[in-house]
Every structure is written in C-alpha cells, then in structure tokens.
Amino acid sequence: MRVATLAIAEGVGVRGLLNVQFAISAGVLYVIEANPRASRTVPFVSKALGIPLAKAASRIMVGATIDELKNEGLLPMSDGSRVPMGAPVAVKEAVLPFKRFRTKEGKIVDSVLGPEMRSTGEVMGIDKDFPTAFAKSQAAAYGGMPTSGTVFISVADADKRAVILPAHRLQQLGFNLMATEGTAEILSRNGIAVTIVAKYSETQDGGGQNVVDLINDGMIDIVVNTPSGGAARADGYEIRAAAVAADKALFTTMAVLGAAVSGMDAADEGFEVRSLQEYAIDRQEALSAEAARALEAAR
Image (cartoon, rainbow, N blue to C red; front, side, top):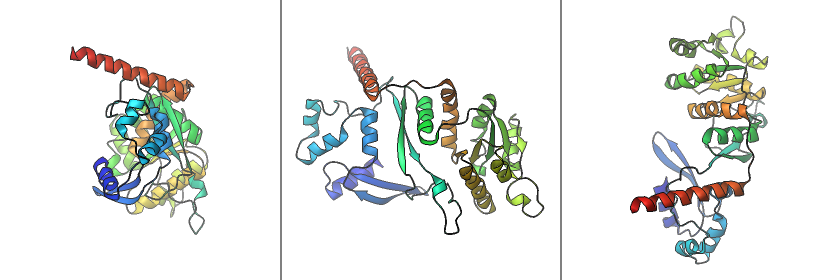
C-alpha cells in the first residue's frame, strides 16, 4: 500500500497530505477514492507519535522541505521506520453503533464489516503495551469488555483451528463456553469444555431453544461469530443481529478476538491514566536511549 500511495501522490502531484481509501479483495488492491486533504487519521497519528503532522504538511504545501522541518525540530530526525523499544502503543477503535443502522424492513443491518463508512466516531487507547491499549480503546468506545460470564463461539471452517488458543485462554480466565456443534467438536477435541447450543435454523421447524434465544434472554455475555457462506451466513446474521440488539460484546474476526482476549487481564486490573505529553516524553526517552545504544555499538 505504501508503494501505491506514493505512486498516487506523485501522479496527482500532491504536496502535503493525501487521504486514500483502499480495499483488498482476492489479493488484489483497489482504490476506492483518493483525496488531496487530511483525514480523521491525521490527528490520531499526530497524538500517537507526538508530531504535529497537519502543521508540517501545511508548511510543505507552501514550500518548506522535510529537511528544513527536521532541522527546525518540527519533524523527527529519524525516518520513523523503526519503533523504539519502550515507546507507547496507540490503538484506534471505530465506534460502530449498528443498532442505529436498519434495513428497509426495519431489521438491524449485518455487523460484518465491508467498505461502507459506518463509523460515527473514533477513540484512542494508549498505554505501554498493546493489551492495555486495546482494553482502553474498548472501554472508551463500548464501555469495556466483560471479564466473566458466558461466551458463545461459532466460527467458519477456515477459523476453527485459529479459535482454539483464544477459547482455551477464555476458559482459563473463568468464562463458560458455548458453541454450535461443528465448533464445539474442534474445541472438545482440544481439551476445552464446551456446551453445545442449537443453531437458529435448527429450531425453526421443530421448536426448542437456540443460541438467538439465549442471547435475547441475557444468558450470553460475549459472542464470537465469523461469517460463512450459504445457510450458515443466514444463521450468522441472526446471531450477530441478536448480539447487537442486546448490547453484547461481538467479535467477528480472529484478529479482534485475539486482541480482546489479550486485553481482558489488563481490563480486570484497571488502568493508569496519563497525559499525551507524558507519553511523548516516554517516546522521546526511548528514542534517545536507542540512539545512544546505536552510537555505542558503532564505536
């Protein structure tokens, strides 16, 4: 993407900031749009790095060079290709109030993400490590993650191996696990205790309690559901829509589930509150320490 962004910027003749929205499908990179302006990401990155990017871009637009801005101290001397050990981690979380988005029939839209802009805002979680920063971002965007209760898991075949370790960690943290038959089989084969729950579609003819009923009745605290094709996708929609309607934590990718599990310990322990200026000092100290080590190694 970096190469593509640079090619677009040079082709358009942009000086300053460029906002490009990419999409990747089947290994092919597509450009949705490219705008010669700042985006919401600019203030986030500026705060995360402690660099006034908008001010630097404005100076470049009127003729200043990057070397001049480095000499003035407005931009760092390093190229930023390496993150120093000890630098804080910043996580940007999108606020996605899916309950407000409805189809023409009045149903809640599917919470599986696509290229459409559905975010109504963004928050930052910043701390010394990723798990804590991620937990902070969830607390700011959605009120935090549950640290106890029952987790329902139903994932696509492609994710069944990847879900084993997060599920095992959830069990270690004291969560009760429920799953549909296919997911339950792979979890139990790996020594994870799990209760089998009927799919939504399995009870439409003969009746009986299914996972959607359990979500609606407040019996499930976290829902893990990755989309599949065919009939499984219809089941998945009902599960995700019920989770959204009930304001339950919902994870639809293995990457987010892994991040959430890593952040649960941090959320349980509580957070340290510090200013962005303090994190900027930490970052500068980490950079200075790394530069000193590099100088010593060169000798």
